Amino acid sequence: MIKKPSQKTPWIKICGLTVPENALECANLGADAIGLVFFEKSPRNVTIQKAALISKILPNHILTIGVFVDESYDSIMEKVNQCALKGVQLHGNEPPDLVDRLLEKKLLVIKALFATKEPFLTQASRYKNASFFLIEYGKGALPGGNAESWDYELSLQLKTKIPLVLAGGLHPGNICQAIKAARPAAVDVSSGVEKSYGIKNLNKVESFITRVKSG
Image (cartoon, rainbow, N blue to C red; front, side):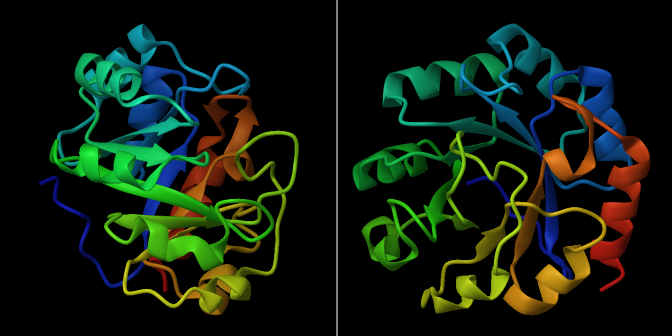
């Protein structure tokens, strides 16, 4: 089983990387996980070849997480194997048995739940074996957070022992308040630290990480 980060402050996933050097710089600044988006409609979509290069360049302790939207088990596992992914984030309305099948492969499995669409926060019990629940608002044109902040306290309505990853509209200016409101095990940021689609602004990344780890 892939080892989960263990620390007092939330661990940090920087998502939507598309350039190996940029991903490595984020890792060197203190990110715990790097998210690689395999969704063709996303402006941060990454090819298998580029994702493999990113995984190869990162230190071994960094969690490489593939983000998928309603993909089949076989399609996901092809990318897991070719890109040496350590975890999978299911960001659509996937069947619960997909979580279990991926867990059997010793992967860390993050299942997204949403405040405003299916699967709703109230449907968490369907995915009771997930490693983490990623919590988002769920409005916008794309399955992700769409840079939209929301009432992070809503995540507290989720009555579960499974640790939570807070996402959606996070940035250096609101991350401390969001952590205080939601008390997550981890935080996930993408557009809030970007210079352009798939390229992170390292000053923003450093500020974000510093504020998370300052408690």
